[in-house]
Length: 403
Image (tube, rainbow, N blue to C red; front, side, top):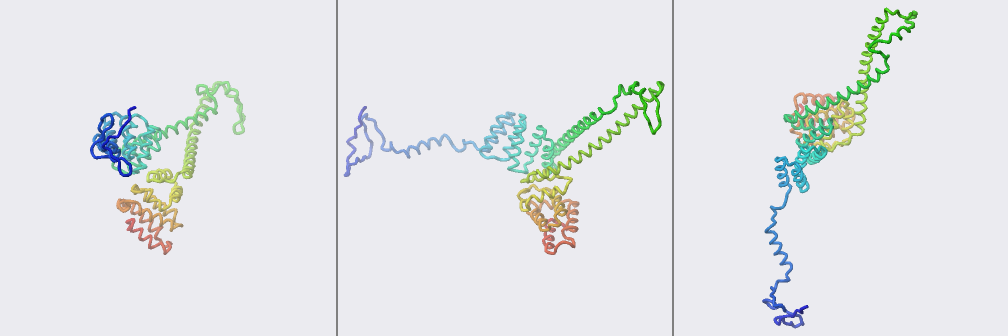
């Protein structure tokens, strides 16, 4: 190993340390090194500056550019590549649009569960995004979730009532669901009738066995009936056949009525169970789904409303409250909360704090205004209204634009 020697140009200071002169330093192999060779921070900055010339911020991926690239792939029908781009966009900055676009790509390759999940994520970010409702309705139809499919399409139609594509999707979903329910009811009825028919008198070719007719020896109305003659056997057999047919028709009609009654009872029980198990809504969509699920039983709707704190209404509805739901809630409050006027007022007041409430009440139809005026006159501002609530209710009346 070659030893390194210090050049004579290095001099010893007063304290015995070596001082580095200006200029260059020589080593034993005659190589020349600049005085800044060991300046590590300076060297790092120089390398970093060189690297920055090749990698600029414009070259780094961002959520928007990945989404746009995904759109280009989608137009080219390269759906898997589009999904990859949308996934990167979501990883960088999740948006409702990116989720909904990826859901559409999933629909194209028939991955319906992933499409449904993406639409749900999109709606968690923006619960008024029409395309997310529409695409989730499509995914749920393919998954056999017809009731949920109708709910999505109906809610989208409420948000955009003049959207023809949404109207068409809702009509198709509703027709498909009704056909499905009718088919299930028909199959159930046929199975029940078939089981019942097996208990009827057995007939060969529609005629009672003549041998059995010959053995008949019964009493009708207290009179002894002799075995019928051979000449009248065919006539009696035909009469028996007609009686059995008539009896079957009657029993089938009775059975149909019984099935309808059982179905009605089952529906009532299902609504009660649904009310017990319904989760508290945290969005306008969830509220409307639960509210419509309890339609036909206002008492259960009142129970759902009572489970929600009045101050939570603005956060739940945000800017997605619709006129029909607003009117329904006011009517429900007037019917079931008249003995709790303080609570009723809190619901009415917090509804006015929902985003775009003033615009909403301007869209009330003349019938809606008449219904609300009737509610105020007959319930909220009648002679039995406690005096301490009269002024508050009068102020609320003006906020609801009721004359």
